[in-house]
Length: 132
Figure 1 (cartoon, one colour):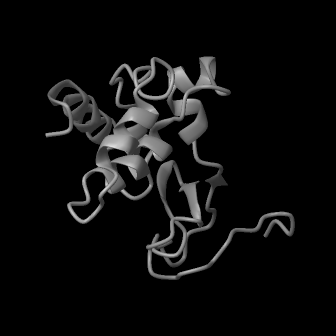
Figure 2 (tube, rainbow, N blue to C red):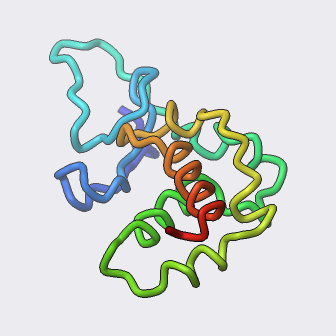
């Protein structure tokens, strides 16, 4: 037991993602990750998510990063949203959107099994087609 170790436990349902960490070498959510009973040792380390995107390493002050762009795609793709063009215009920048080189380390590092790179590609396609 390490008394200095703590993690957030907000939803307990795998929804919020606030308890994401690397557990025994696999990225996951602590609220959903099962630890084998009788295991003598469990290794818990921070997620490699910030160290997984080279574009974020090199441009942390200007590149939005995979998590922010994944969230942006959620709004851009929402058919009920009336500001799709404005949202696309806001991220149409060489650093905000186009620093993603589709290395897809973000997909391997995502504890929820999402694929931010795929969604970033979707946004880039929308930019090319004018949001149609």
